[in-house]
Amino acid sequence: MVALAVSGGPDSLGLLLLAREAELVVTVHHVDHHARSTSGQDAETVRALCDRLGVTCRVHDVVVEPGGNFEARARAQRRRVLPPGSLTGHTMDDLAETVLLNMLRGAGVDGLSPMVNDPSKPLRALRRQELHDYVLDEDVVPVHDETNDDPAYRRNRVRHELIPLMNQVAGRDVVPLLARQAEVLFEDRAWLDFIGIDDAARDVSDADCRELSGWPRARLRRWLRAKLFTVDDQNERHPPSAAEVERATRVVVGEAVATELSGGRRLARRAQRLSLEDDSTTLAGHG
Image 1 (cartoon, helix red, strand yellow):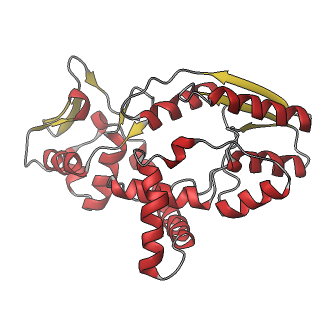
Image 2 (image 1 turned 90 degrees about the vertical axis):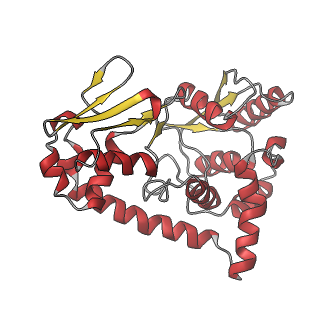
């Protein structure tokens, strides 16, 4: 039995139809964020299709207040109510958009290789248009989420403006190129994780700065990025900025005694040992 996250849009409906075609036993989970006046209609559309297909449907009501960082907060609410491992209808186009979004915020190799090898995204090798055509051929009418056309959301601008411009400049479809790049970087990332398995087990407070100072800078910075992450109110992890990693590196090699980090934290060096402190507590480091 598999759980499917189905919004009612063409991507998630394509996922549902393909799962039924594969004769999988599925349970559909629809999350109503109540962010649009028409969201209740989306839920009814999904329920009606599930009744037609003989599929169990569960609707989860959540409230996401309007305001900044809406997409991240809505995503966190979905993750909270959806069963672990729920399958989603993300396509190759979504992967490419995520690569570009992560690039725009200055992500490293991890952020530039999203979704690859993610079992919860089984359609990541399919193109969005292929999936939409399949849904229409099955005589299913998807719902239209008007927020997907709103340029206030950065992903929409990447989808409707940036990628078409890149296609024009490159003289070809760049989405497969971005997907292939993500796969190559994922392979590099997997290798780095493998050779750094002992590094990953070392907490901040366990490290000897004399040893760390002798590491290649790439190894040291990757270790610092892994250890100095923060977790936001939506329970999403965020790596430190490049500037924070550079300042932390200076502490490790003895060019600075301490540095301030995001989240009210402070990384300090004393007697060749590191401590990571917040406003009132010394942390042992992220394991």
